[in-house]
Image (cartoon, rainbow over the protein chains, first blue to last red):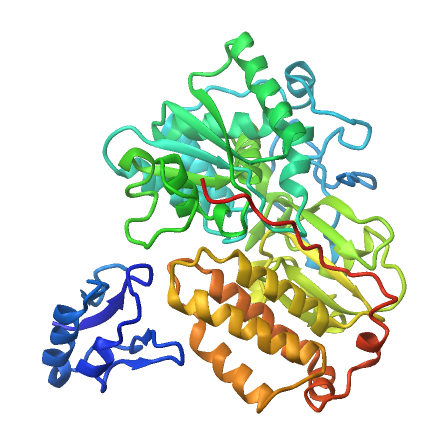
Length: 70
Length: 452
């Protein structure tokens, strides 16, 4: 099942933990806010993505099924 | 004050019967007179009796049939996003339970005056369309949302609603609300948030209003001009609607022209009219090299590139533009487009809802960069830094506010590329050097009083 990282930009407060957890997927802009990857999360990085979602202090990250709407 | 013109030939006056549309090339399109009948001689709103004389009564309309008619007409939203109205109505009606209809008259686009002109000249057209749409999607009430502080506009709409109540011509209740008049407060999620008792700030989607909107009900939020077209489609049908405009941009649309024109104001043209033709209606005044199209979330272009382009989102998409809210601003050749853009970007940065990081920090940063550029006082690697910042902001807010600011800034760097190179090396262009003596072109509204 293909999944995509999505963010609620209002909930995100720029802790930046996600970029520490999954640097292969998420980088931070110059103000410390995460930039989501464009495509679906590759299978070999799914564990990292799930950990980033679980550890987000603002509960702003989620993994959406690709094709399940926005 | 709203300048209004509906002079000229009437290519699409109200018909006796509706024949299928004959397709004319964009070069033959021009002024239309559907929504604007009688505007030229009126200094106030048309009353119910005048309205009925002009358009006839609103026919009773079985719900599904109106949705089909609007879909076949190909009507798209006239507020800026251009979403197909029939698709929106279907999405609302397919959700369970009673729906809500919201007529969005907020018109937060500073260079647009068309919604105010429409509501203050022909309020019953808007109310007809909202009532018809409410019946079609199963909504017992219509919320009419207007900008706070526009007292004469509010009075005109209140008067029209009272007139209808006395005539007993509606099966829906109209409620009029005045919302804080911020740039992002007119977006549909912000209006829904405010109507639900919150702040007039955009919210994260999903849920979208058609799914869970006002009181968690399926909610149709559409621009007031869109509803005025619905009122005419309900009367005259989709074939009549398509007699004006292009196959992929049918009907008519209201535009607001300003800048280097002799008669700025609101005009009704067929959708798909060439931008050069549309601008000529308000008499281009002097030399114009650049035009802003869409609004402050729109884009700058060379007039030579734009004048033969039709006012159609499908066609304009190819050059990174859109019809937006129908705003067309002709920049006088002696003005500096970089300075105009910097002023707008600073205002857009201040208009953010301070909810999302990329917008809260990114927009002031690009506004600062642009101010350095506009004043020809570059710090560090200005253009590299600006391009890098513009590259990371789009698509990262809850609403499209950062996307719009980025689009405007990028288009300015492209349309005024030669000036930008000069400014970035510390040499202001001629327009910037003379800017003290030239008037400012793009209007910047005063601050807003809050979000409640």
